[in-house]
Amino acid sequence: NAGVMQNPRHLVRRRGQEARLRCSPMKGHSHVYWYRQLPEEGLKFMVYLQKENIIDESGMPKERFSAEFPKEGPSILRIQQVVRGDSAAYFCASSPQTSGRLTYNEQFFGPGTRLTVL
Amino acid sequence: TQLLEQSPQFLSIQEGENLTVYCNSSSVFSSLQWYRQEPGEGPVLLVTVVTGGEVKKLKRLTFQFGDARKDSSLHITAAQPGDTGLYLCAGARGANNLFFGTGTRLTVIP
Image (cartoon, rainbow over all chains, first blue to last red; front, side, top):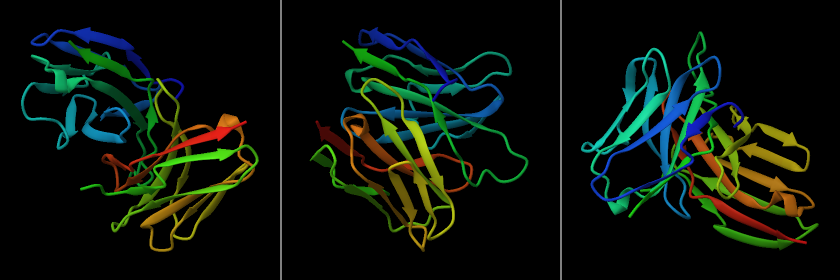
């Protein structure tokens, strides 16, 4: 997972506050994915983005959650009015753009942001 | 509904023993990946298998993709304490998200 950077590594918020999680993909990667992991569980897909486009947000809650991947700068996962149930580890992954189909879809993960909602 | 089921969920073995972890699904995947995750870190990609029946070896780790591309196994020979971690399989269907398995938490006792 070398190269994918996430910050902050740990984030504490009170109920009702906003959480902003940042992800810088590996150099040369133009596809970004966000996943959520609850304790002792596997990763659950949230959203898939390419530069300036949301490709698939089928795993993201319809309310309070949003994601962007601007032309310049990191991808941002934003959670508004956080609740205790949002406490989890949030992982970002990136994959390279290929000329053909992304059949293999190898994704490289960052170290995650651990969100705690008090 | 969990798309990929892993077994066993927990495994504790002595150093030097062999083990196999299974990843099963009723769905077909274009590729399947195995990751290892250590506490407080992100998953690290170990291998990608693409072709049905494919076998890949990574030192003491042997990965196999089922003929129908619905299941996979990870075999570790002569396990070492450094193999301890959470092993995750993940299936891909094209360019979109990965479907992660439930995970197998392996502990190798020195």
